[in-house]
Each structure stands twice: as C-alpha cells, then as structure tokens.
Length: 257
Image (cartoon, rainbow, N blue to C red):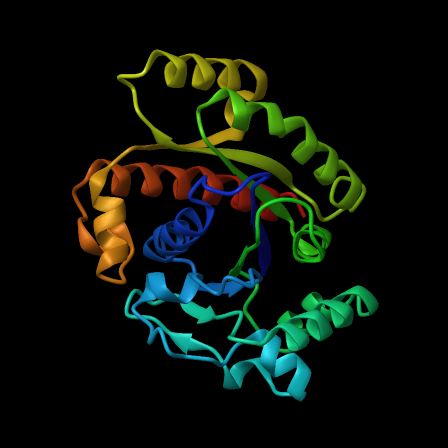
C-alpha cells in the first residue's frame, strides 16, 4: 500500500478536482484506489456522484468511535471514497484536537482497512499549513503539490518544499514530492514561462500538466470525474499521462525494496 498526499499552498488551484481526477486515472490504470478527504470543506465525495446530503465521514466516525468501513462508499468509477463528513464547529475543533494528540490516527486507521500491497490511498487536504496537511505529509510516501502557472503560485513553492522537508524527507519510506501544474492555458505567455521555469527547476518531478479545459467544470456539474464525463478531452488525456508518471514512480520504488 502506498499513501499519496495531494497538497497546495493556496486555495483556488483546483486541488480537490485534481485529486478526484487523479484517483480515477489511477483506478483506470489498474490500481485499487481509496480516496480519503481530510478537508473540512467535504467536497471530494461530490466528484464521485455521491449524495450532497451525506453527513457520514471520517471526522464523525472518529468522534463516535466508528469503523471507517462503515462510512465509505464505492463510486461508479471504482474508486472507494471516505468523505470528511459534515460536522458542526464544535465537533470540527474536537476532531482537530484528536488529530493533534493522536499522531498515529491516519496510519492506524488505514492499516485497519486491510488494503493490499498494490493499493493506493490518496489524501485530499485543505490549502496551506494545517493539522490536516501535517497529518497527510507525515504518512505519505509520495506528495503531489498542485499549483497554477502563475507568479503567485510559483512564489509559494519554497514554503511547500519546506513542509515536505520537515515532515517527509527524513522517513525512509518516502519516495519524493512531485508537481502537477493545473489549468494551463498555452495561449498565455506567463503560463508558458512559469511552466518552462518549473520544468527547469524540477525536471521530471513535474509529473502532470493539466490544460485548461471546459470539460473539467462541466464534469463537476454532473458529479463526475472528467475522465468519465469526456474520455476524449484534453484534460482526460493529461490526467491519464500524470497517473502513468506517478505509477512509474510507485513501481520503481516498490521494485527497489
């Protein structure tokens, strides 16, 4: 089993959408995928055709001492989803206090699911430093940093690399951190320039370039991944290519153990 944390320094980069589509792409590539929402916005499950009124999730399960298997669901795309859940403000704060005092919360609950050695757990997190991001980074073998091809997003990358250095790099099971550049519009000079600089800085660690595509927002309106909504569109091909790059990293690391 491998754990992938999907993170971003700032909001508005399309991280949750990228998480959902990456999960679907990895599933189409043959992996069993568990998507875990660690973002209090609780939006990840909406990308998988789930009932918007669902309140069950890992936050409520944790506070109630409930098994995670009782709150997940299998999506039509084959991805198994564990929502964050709908909680009031007092319960959210209680849940966050639990995470602060139980550093083993995530690995312990994931291990209890009895996943296979080739299965993948993908974690969605809120933007910016938080107990959720720290929890995800502390458990992940691979960190995916989602960013936009603009100056403001590029300026946040050193902070993200610092967090990876703090919570990931010292662990022997950590593979690497990689980048997905989202909403790329090749008609804009700045977008092309930022992407070029990122490729010069990070090389093959830029594992995904997701072009701006109207099908992505249309897919969400239908509670679907873009891969299910429009299998032929540019964004679908981009996510499949990104998943192949990530799969290659996971396979190479696994063969070296």
